[in-house]
Amino acid sequence: MHVGVRATLTAQNLTPATTTIDALTAAGMDHTAALMYAAEFTQTLGIFTYNMSVLGGVIAGVVTVLLHNRFYTIELPTAISFFGGRRFVPIITVVCLPLVGIGLALIWPTIGRGIAWVGELIGHSGQYGAFLYGFSERILIPTGLHHILNETVRFTPIGGVATVDGETIVGALNIFNVSLTHPGAVSDDVIREATQFLAQGKIPIMMFGLPGAALAMYHCAQPEHKKRVKALVLAGALASFTTGITEPLEFCFIFVSPLLYLVHAVLSGLSFMLMSMLHLMIGNIQGGAIDLMVFGVLGGLKTQWWYAVLLGLIYFPAYYFIFRFIIRRMNVETPGRESEDIAVEAAPVSADERTKNIISGLGGESNIEEVDCCFTRLRVQVKDMSRVEDKTLMTTGANGINRVNEHNIQVIYGPKVEKIANDVKIALGVTG
Image (cartoon, rainbow, N blue to C red; front, side, top):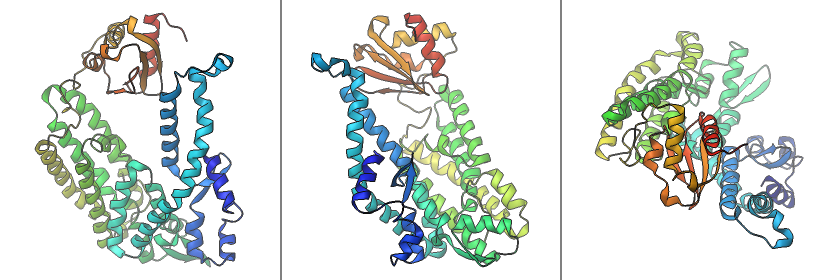
């Protein structure tokens, strides 16, 4: 895909040599604009391309899956039949992805300019900019585009400018890091202008808000599912509280209730704004207990870290009651509230019994044509999808089921899937 992007960029006379900051400033672009423009490009596996971050991988993966599902059963003429079926998939992928790259190269600048415009607006809006940053980052996380916003704020003049030992430092994260290595070289006011985009705005959310949402999801789960939900949300809450890693909790509600995620984004923006108004000075980028202790408490009284804790004590019940109200009022299918035909508790059984139930849920041995797995999913090709019983599969400890097409199904088990796949293969007499 990036080969197609590079070809398009080369046709526009955009190369690694012509997109350096020095080359851009020599061409008449001011330094700030040159920094932002140069950040739009990167090297991926040695290929000069747009900096698409996570979204580029998602696009490539989606296109590959679509091509696989369309062509993995294709039959070619006898003379070239060797290249039919699954062997045809990498061939057609190599042909199509560069074309996709050409299309992306034509539309990506518009997307990048839009996000850069948001970054500029954030940088010139003071405390309201902090709100806009916190809100926008949270909204963009599912798409992966938040990396563009983060890099714009953390590593360009939009996030702040400071001069240390005659050297100009730009970007919120760069300024904070330099303040650690050169104590006293950067004024507290400049540091605070930078940290309004860093960890301090996340601490009330990660340490208090999302754990409150986790408790709400647990209390809203059906009684028979609470044991399963407790294990799920407790692990997510601990990850969020200690390290600021929020995906395990956010993905419990982000796709089943966009309203909940919108509320979450608004409260995130409000947290950033309030921390800026209260003049906190806590840097780094995670926002968990580690950041609070290392960059807040150990940073002394000037960080005013206690305000983050006080706001967090308000955010915990706020998240709890808001999430509980919306989940129950709108009957949101958060964990433990799924439709009865799929929300089935896994009864403790032996590995052999589980394997038998999996095979039975897939329609029996005669209905299974091929079994494989990836990191988290059991991938099965079946003859007749109507014979597959989701309810039976869910009793085997599955976290979800994805029917890819009329002959392919994926049963989501998580990291334990490799052993499950091996057990199923052994039971079916399949090797390899």
